[in-house]
Image 1 (cartoon, rainbow, N blue to C red):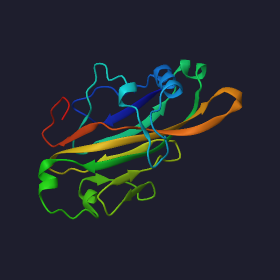
Image 2: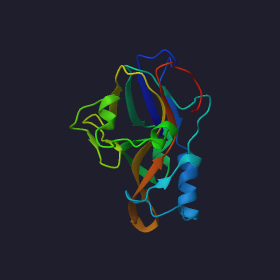
Image 3: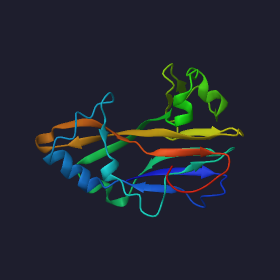
Image 4: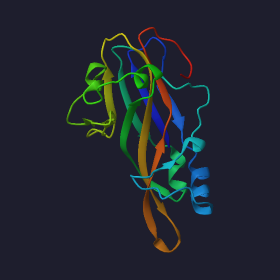
Amino acid sequence: MYIKIKLKPTKIYSKPIIFPILLPALQEAMTECYLGIGTPYEPIAIDNFVTIGNYVFPVLEPDSHITISLEPNSDDDKGMLKDPKLVCCMVKNVGKAFTDKNCKLQGYWDDIFDYKKEWVQNTPDGTLYIAPDKKKKCKISTKDVQLDDNVSYSIMFSMVLKEKKNKQRRYYFVLDPLVKISSGGGTGTP
């Protein structure tokens, strides 16, 4: 299974950004170690179980359409982790310029992103929650604004761990990378 981030149109990325999830390693760690309770309130961080490879975390340009999805691999059926579901994506501004000033948190994202209010919730603490649409994809677009800031985004998904004796439970996982929003473009990790 892998997390797929599709950006279009884009000057920097010619193809989707793919982050493979090392399901056998994650499964082994879950059965042999305590990684956390794995609830929506306290999901298990999977940063150590995701391969970045040649990709860098994306730079978001003005007028970009962003789509995040979970995509299956042919090997996914061999393990005890089953039934992956994208739960939501969360966005927070972690840029120093933003956190150093007294910002209005409610409605802040309306100036940066264009989105369908049916799938997106802007909370009073400044977090933007993006739910998957009917096609099981989180979608949002950047507006044509001049901005140069760093944001933290989280991709939360869940899977069922089928253990011995037909015992199973749904666990929640989160990937927490950083991304740069930039009018000037650029590459590399923020």
